[in-house]
Image 1 (cartoon, chains in turn brown, yellow):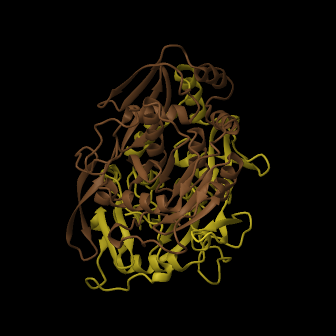
Image 2 (cartoon, chains in turn green, cyan):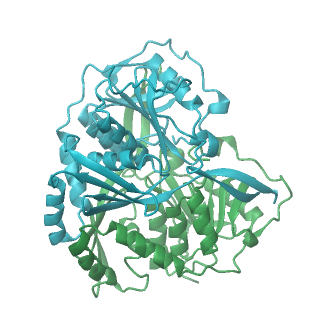
Amino acid sequence: MSKEHPSGTSQNTGLIIQPDPGDDRLSAAVSGIDHDGKPVDLRVVTERPLTLFLNRQEIVTMMTIGDHPDLLALGYLINQNMLNPDDPVSGVDYDDDLGVVVVRTEAETQFEEKMKKKVRTSGCAQGTIFGDVIDAFDDVTLADNARLKTSWLQALTKQINTTPSLYLEAGAIHGCVLCQRDKPLVYMEDVGRHNAVDKIAGWMAVNKARPDDKIFYTTGRLTSEMVIKTVMMGIPILVSRSGFTAWGVELARKAGLTLIGRARGKRFIVLAGAERVEFDTAVSSGEDEDERHNRKGAQR
Amino acid sequence: MSKEHPSGTSQNTGLIIQPDPGDDRLSAAVSGIDHDGKPVDLRVVTERPLTLFLNRQEIVTMMTIGDHPDLLALGYLINQNMLNPDDPVSGVDYDDDLGVVVVRTEAETQFEEKMKKKVRTSGCAQGTIFGDVIDAFDDVTLADNARLKTSWLQALTKQINTTPSLYLEAGAIHGCVLCQRDKPLVYMEDVGRHNAVDKIAGWMAVNKARPDDKIFYTTGRLTSEMVIKTVMMGIPILVSRSGFTAWGVELARKAGLTLIGRARGKRFIVLAGAERVEFDTAVSSGEDEDERHNRKGAQR
């Protein structure tokens, strides 16, 4: 059995990792006043700062819901091309009180060397990092033989929308799901869409998961950032229930990524890489989304 | 007449600045394939990298739709507490081909001095900047006597939802609107919610607009970032049609900001600063949102 499918998966959903709406640290009770002037009590998602260090190098302060800080840290560094998935990581230390996570590598990484040079000349290397990611993006080749059946798409959408989640409990949160064929495998949520992606990238690195037979589902918009991260992760198919930007579509076409937007129940639009899509459902067949589970959070 | 209300406002909407869905640079034609395998043509919002310099200091590369780069640059620096609204700006240079915007000040700013010290010790100063913003946040006092009538809220929501916009044209974009009483004044859109806010901050600085009698409306979620930016801008009332995070609510209460979420037609929830809200509409009266203009983009 591969490390991707441990025996301890949930009995109910089949997911290896799923949202935990019952975790008290992830949501809080907040009281308010409604339009009629009456008091209301709500569950609201938490959000806390997490400062990431790569060895002794401070990298960024992220706003996150706070679960899986180790996977978030690893995934962020890998998706930013600051850490190679093969770089030996000697440890990840997390301090909940300080809101600090430190990723330690045995040797100094290539990134730190680059960062040192860069900061001497222009101070903050965010622009350079962006350039590096775009360069790395150009070198990725995605699996040609990956497939997506439209019947899988319907099954995935339905299962994801009905899985208990913080979204259904409290709203105001994004979800990302790593899938294989018609099965969701790893479902992460976060207040920042990019954090949910990075946590999945961290999970894939730790579990040495193959990317070429996976499908990435997100509730968020298909911006350039989302396309770049998916390609950097080596996943050939990206699906969103939300809309897309022109540059997101352009980058997907350049990278040979299959990009699908506005995926809701039976409806969707293929923007790039249509050769991987197999239309195995009858024209305009399939159920529409159940109203109760209709995510209102998605953007056209 | 104050600089805030030039005579050249739009005849149709009364807005000083409004979205320009007809601007070809802001959206592009994209072709795709729908769920029935049929070709579809769509208008999709653009997104492009813009690298910001403060004098010779490279600050950040932002993903933006691309309009008002000068206001975005100024607003970003002000909202990050890197530039004081009173710092004399000698010029803002924008190069469309390079995707670079440079804000020039007569003297070196306090921020650059701090940045130099910081980069020598820890490389990249993002964490410090975050700390600085939180410190500055604690010093802000918001106007006690500001008011929000629930009838204004209904009028604002209706006018904003029916104003021609890139959202209505192409979707996948956030909107922020600076309002006064029941009138929207400045309506900015961007692929990044934070960019739309920053463009309004830039407009306020250039036009020396008073913040204390304004209301800030956003389509995006009320996260800590959004609350911090609104408080930094000195605006006492923040309204969103989307949801909120626990820390966003906590920060709003700490700063004495009036925070209203899930504002859609007649429904809304007041999370903080309810003393500024005047319930002048009958209980559960008022129109529900017109379906045609119902923004699906909002998050609970």
